[in-house]
Amino acid sequence: MVLTADRSGERADAALARLAPDLTRSAAQRLLEEGRVLREGRPLRKNDKLQAGDVLALDLPEPQPVALEPEDIPLDIVYEDNDLLVINKPKGLVVHPAAGHWSGTLVNALLYHCRDSLSGINGELRPGIVHRIDKDTSGLLIVAKNDFAHQALAAQLQDHTLARTYVCLVVGGVREDSGVIDAPIGRHPTDRKKMAVTEKNSRHAVTHWRVLERFPGYTLLECRLETGRTHQIRVHMAYRNHPIVGDTVYGRPKPELGQDSQCLHARALTFRHPRTGETMTLTCPLPDYFTRLLEALRRRT
Image 1 (tube, rainbow, N blue to C red):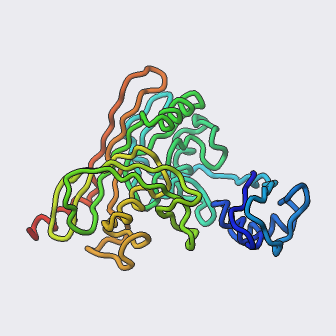
Image 2: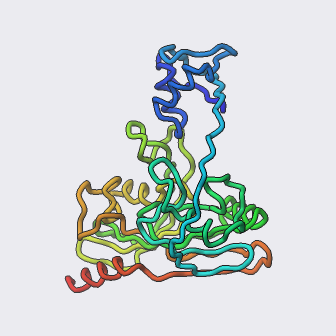
Image 3: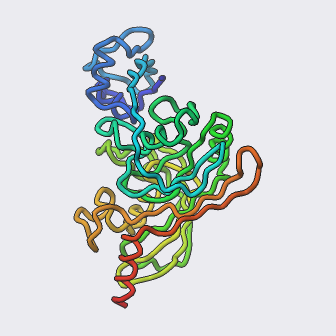
């Protein structure tokens, strides 16, 4: 990995942690201590000061393999054939293993259901995972059973022909009937666990939205992703001062309307089947908790 310093006078460990989104400060310090970060061919120390424009070469160690176990976790399968399957993921289910979640994930369930029929493009920790949705977001997610399908679906994600449509309940009354949020998203400047609308170290992000229903103090929206950045809808809605109900990370710090996680559901997917070329549109209903909440809001009006 190669990074370019954009500030003068910043310590090397702090700069690495800021510029490389996947590195914590402690991980950056370990790389520096092991001599894995070079400036002009010479190892940097963690307290060395950088100059804007310094080019840093990082030698990242290979991740240690983790033995993942297949687990008999029920899956709500919306569609399946020899190339792919589409899952209706419940909220609360982590998609792929990571620190703190080495079991009980969607990948563990897929290893049990598919056995050896999963693409290996994303490595041992994310077999078959073409795209992901947050732990507390429910709805549709595509899984590739082989590398051919994975590459074709990933290409559709890249050229925006794989359409992902979400439904969310946001705080406040949205005045317009529809619109587009075109605002770049990158790592939050001070809280590395969050994303934010920012011009620094960010990526282009576009969300199309329209109003489905209005309630006193809340609005039900349909959102279509043109790009797929981490937490994109959650960040964009908060940026527009209409955070998603139950999103205590980007919205109100305390749960409201009895929701302890965001009211965000991936309702529809449209894509070309990687082998047949057929255009497929798959949908799934709102989960029960979401439906009950909307019914309660309707009774208030």
